Length: 110
Image 1 (cartoon, rainbow, N blue to C red):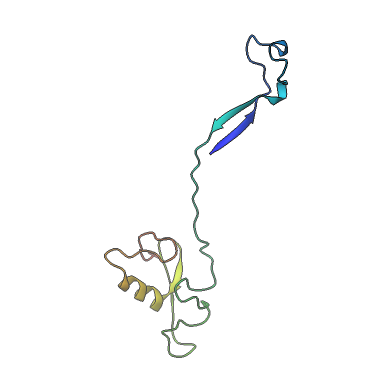
Image 2: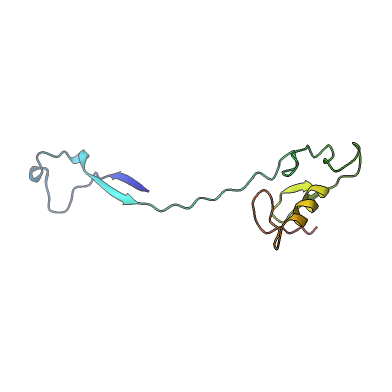
């Protein structure tokens, strides 16, 4: 990535007369810039990241609404229905990853 910086300073031992065709404001300096970006998913979702069902409802594996369907959080702060994350973790090998951020999955210790 390159950025152009406008050079408003005069160079040492030069004057405007040395560069009559170039105005002072037309001089630019090319700078290099190396950037690194990082992002994470919002951990405050209202729905399970696996089944996309609302947390206040039940997951698809629960037979009837109102069945016990607790939420589980990972060390990365992503939350899922218990049944959804257990099914996900058991389908991953050899190291399960969070379905949202792909970090190694670890259940959050309370």
